[in-house]
Image (cartoon, rainbow, N blue to C red; front, top):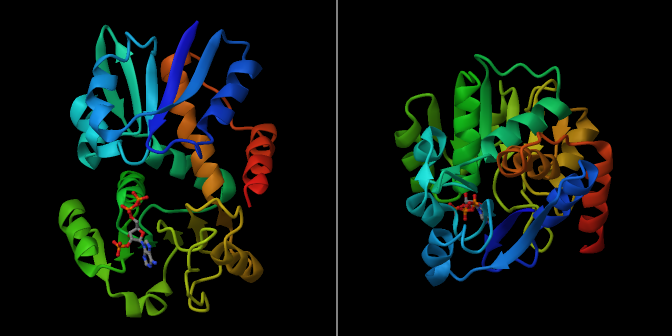
Length: 276
Ligand code: ATR
């Protein structure tokens, strides 16, 4: 019996057990995936004793992504990000990686199969942890240029310094102007999430072939995605990223590479709708 878990503080809202539980059943694997509420001051102790607790690995979510990276042995990707969301034991050593960027790219490719990014330009809104993972993934997939807009300009400048001259910070009041010539627009902020303000933006200047992605998945279709779909843009919602980021972790712990199917998506969508 292989066990894995997701740890966070709080953790009640996590949909990871639903996703991994579905795959365990589908692939008839003798395993379990549980939720564990771990307070920040107990994180180190918990991770250092992960095997003792009976786990082969875990997902880490808010607020543990950076701390987990310092406690476990990060791979090259986690090192470049300074954060991790997926931990796994090998020969008694706890390794850390990040699957958020891979999840974003896989979801985007599934939703906008014709989209070409190599040598093109993208506009990213937000400069937090999710933005870092997505920017890195876009750069690694050959994006030519990224314009970065953030409410707090210093954080966008900091990311630009970190990632180099392919990332340009743009002032918030130039957001709509900056839509011109983009092949992709990504919202990585919580704007548009249920209970949060919406992202006030008119997409008029965005080229019609550009794709629009949002990491928010409550609601499943944010006002941004609704506006984009009405204009005919290919759209990619946050639920796809959530589902696809889970693939690599499941394979690392349970040894089978699972598939993101319409059946799984419908299961998690129904759960999201229940909470709205
Ligand atoms: P995460 O790790 O999920 O990306 P984060 O590091 O807290 O979370 O980042 C949240 C992002 O959403 C930031 O870019 C934040 O902007 P600031 O850097 O100015 O804080 C952005 N954000 C959150 N609420 C916002 C709001 N009401 N208006 C504009 N941006 C907002």
